[in-house]
Image (cartoon, rainbow, N blue to C red; front, side, top):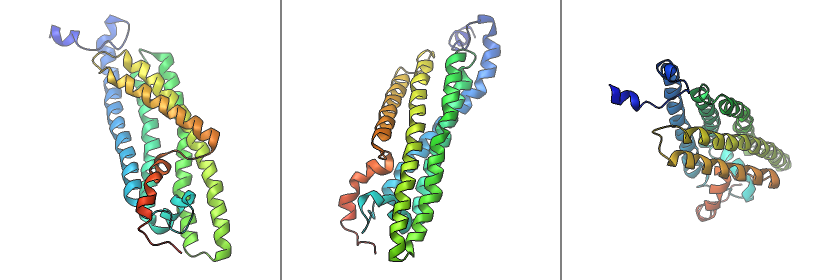
Length: 243
């Protein structure tokens, strides 16, 4: 019994409150771990669907920057599934940050409040994902039966929408990257947690910040769809162009 108690990570600075705080924090910890699993699964699902459902057909007769629109036109179900995972990723990563804030709020109230605010604020990226899901899918449907005169207007609308989506993603990514760096500081002071965990969060947060700054500076999407689009050429070359 004595050995078990000495191994419980201290969640507060007051030794007399350990049992009470452990009971309060335990549900938050369970929610935190489950949300982390859901976030990882959502992101893996997104990348998988991009590779399987979006990239193989390439952009067809359209320029490379219309890869998403071509995918929404060619395989609407696969595209909606992929972007559905994108929506889920923003939701679950934001939820993870809120759960992390709840887990550490009694121990690190200031940092936890910052993490919670950043987690809620990054929902602006969710707006971009929802716009992608509804807007690009709708434009893809319209492009399928559009006359030649209307195709130009649809392509212009897609580019305008992508600019708004990219800004939303960049803003959300800035907040999420900052939150990851702050969370790494919380995890670093947690007894029993592998040292690699906070290091990975610092690395992920730093890369996210750099990606978001680049996205804001250039206006270019550097997310999974765009980055994996580099692989489009060898696959797309074997596919017949789309009319």
